[in-house]
Length: 250
Image 1: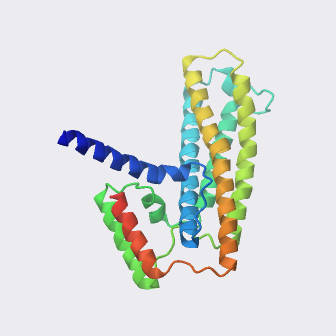
Image 2: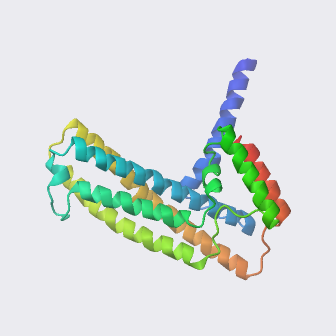
Image 3: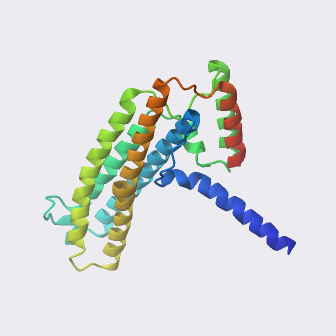
């Protein structure tokens, strides 16, 4: 009985830890009232958007290379149709546009914070030690903990939104090609590629735009609160929250 309770308790802790990170990859209607919490939510969601586009861009790039080498015989990937371009070319374009969106989000991010925020590499002792020393060194130099994402840059959000619109337009062409491909006979390999492509499309063209709109809306609320003179988080509370984040990610 004690063992069973221990497993249940451990399972709940794991579930709680997973949800703590996963929730930033999902749409929400919950708006933090406190400006410091709102800022942290914006940071986390910006990092989540960066990860989504990075992973999908890499998957699309690798898939394009594989199809060029192994499925070159299929007219689905070579023949131009109603979209004016072969699916292989559109996959490459979508991969490039996804990476560009990632780079746009990443340009105002702390690299260590980008890897650390969702527990990446926390199990690697060397990286964890490097990250803690780096945070301490930067704190000693600046006398404050720098944010994981600098959102005060006015062009940061607007540029990201513009690039996302371009990425979405490329995605529309990919969707048309997927519909065209589904009307043709497919081998097992082609079906796998189409399924993988559809998954990345759902992520980048449905989930990501919703999250991008959420971040933009939260950012506007943050600016309004800042203009109204609400105080930001003090350095001491930053230190406490950073230490609590480190302990939670262990």
